[in-house]
Image (cartoon, rainbow, N blue to C red; front, side, top):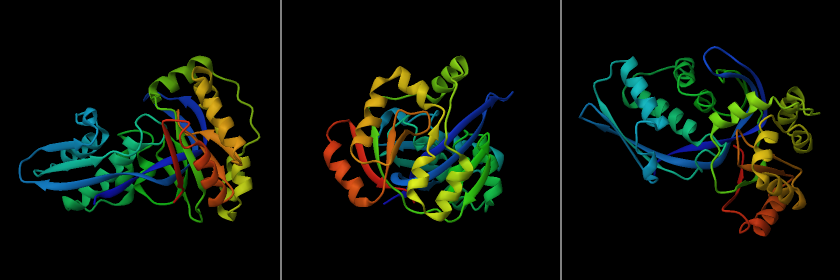
Length: 282
């Protein structure tokens, strides 16, 4: 049994300007969900890093978990090696942060294995070098995430939200999504408000959370992939309080009032799409 490496959803995502590093400024509320990869990390006496995965196409040096291990190794001149085995359950390039989560889990656990005893702030700084979603996964709880993903304010009173996740079975590259966003600069009008959302999470007000879901990527992804709008409608028709694209898509999630409504919706639509998952936030 490995270490769970949880996926995330974006309850809110606003994209700001692109800065000189190539990253965009963002404003987001992220929360982990129970859907997770499982990671096993073992020490190696040889001075090398091996990444193995149930999905063979991820067994290469572009894997974020590999990059995380290499970053630690170089920065702290570690002379030991590690074998990282990933049981992949989170869909790839799905807007759920699967690779970013694997990288964060690798950083935290290799820090222990290699007796580096890094503090959360150090881990977040390292995580920011790997990608804008990685720092969020270093800590627990929902969080307000700003800057290039490196400014993280935990929302302490976060609670469990019942959701149904639907992935249409294809991938959307985050790189493409940002490029398309910069090119189209969509005019986005929304009544959703990030401060109201954070307050609603703290008050455990599910209806107010649903009212303040927002994602700047949604019009871009929905324009290119018509099925995204179909999925959203399907969730709303089946009693979701609201539904929205997570991250750069194409996964859409619906927020439900209770486990009963979520379960009923899941049973009705579980065979309509390649990946339908009943879960909740943690």
